[in-house]
Amino acid sequence: MARAGLTAERLTRAGADLADEVGFERVTVSELARRFDVKVASLYSHVKNSQDLKTRIALLALEELADRAADALAGRAGKDALAALADVYRDYARDHPGRYAAAQFRLAPEAAAASAGVRHAQMTRAVLRGYDLAEPDQTHAVRLLGSVFHGYVSLEMGGGFSHSAPDTQETWSRILDALDALLRNWPAP
Amino acid sequence: MARAGLTAERLTRAGADLADEVGFERVTVSELARRFDVKVASLYSHVKNSQDLKTRIALLALEELADRAADALAGRAGKDALAALADVYRDYARDHPGRYAAAQFRLAPEAAAASAGVRHAQMTRAVLRGYDLAEPDQTHAVRLLGSVFHGYVSLEMGGGFSHSAPDTQETWSRILDALDALLRNWPAP
DNA sequence: ACCATTTGCCTAAGAGCTTTAGGCAAGTGC
DNA sequence: GCACTTGCCTAAAGCTCTTAGGCAAATGGT
Image (cartoon, rainbow over all chains, first blue to last red):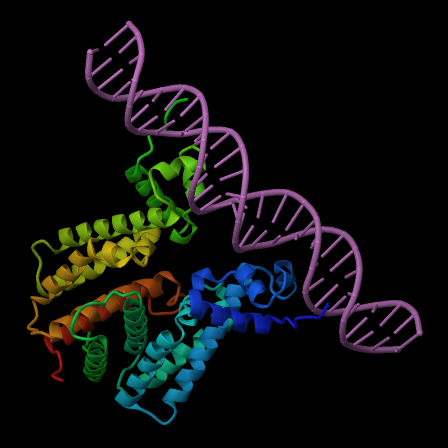
């Protein structure tokens, strides 16, 4: 019997593609086996279990997202950098909804600490260097930006803003304007 | 054989409690049947299927959340109202994590239109009456607030802010201060 | 109070996903 | 060329979901 050439990495990538097609929550070891034209049990030599597979997909998504963000931030500062970072999240979620959902997957603490999640926080801090914020306000601002980016993208993808004018692109720009204004004028306690 | 007195409503409430205990994604028709000491198939007379059950739980959560919000907003205006509404979301998510997750469940368009989701949007608009925003800025602001509230709560619950100073309560207050300042000083396009 | 009807929960059964155990054959290294 | 490792397989058990059909408990009209 010819071998299919399974690998944890190939499975992870295929799982991520599957997530983008059918949604992260419907990523299943069985479906993945079907796609590789292989029996289900065979996957268990490469991946511990379903949880492990999902964790790998999540880590992949976090990496990809961090790579895109690093690219987008190169050579930018101030509002330019803010908008670039924001767009990376929004565009990634549009291009890869399943991967984006995977990036939200609850990781075990050690996995989380070793993940690209750390880079995300660093990059948000890098954006804030264009604004004049001392600690602890900088941390507050990091958390605010994370909340807005994630919250907006997830509401928009979830259809929370649908069927209503004005269109979401317009809102997105105005929110970025507003955040820029806010960061330039962060209120004292 | 004694009857268990099953009802769509009782199942929904028990399902919501179950969600709070083990997480919304682990709410299962089987587990619910176990809790009522009844065979699984019996639930299918009261609830169409697993999807239907989850939808009902989601609608319940949206109602409860809207009721809490309406309560909290009564007699408040301006920043007071803003903070009260924000706290309702955060507190509800803390008290009822499973229900909160359920409230994020993707509803079918008709279900969504008939849900308490509409009230949520109205209440956010009510809060904005304390600030001087004309359309379309008001809609942009509604979306911003929704994004921040949802994004913050979901990152905080997901452990996104864990293990790091300053504590999340402090950040939350400062974010509300910042939003208040931003709304009082919304930038022109 | 009695019988007919409705309603509620049951048994049975099929189909899918997950996971473990053990086997045979295709590659790998001496 | 042979022993060994590795990769995919078959088999099987356990869990969830869902439908179909049956019996008994409630309900209500006479």
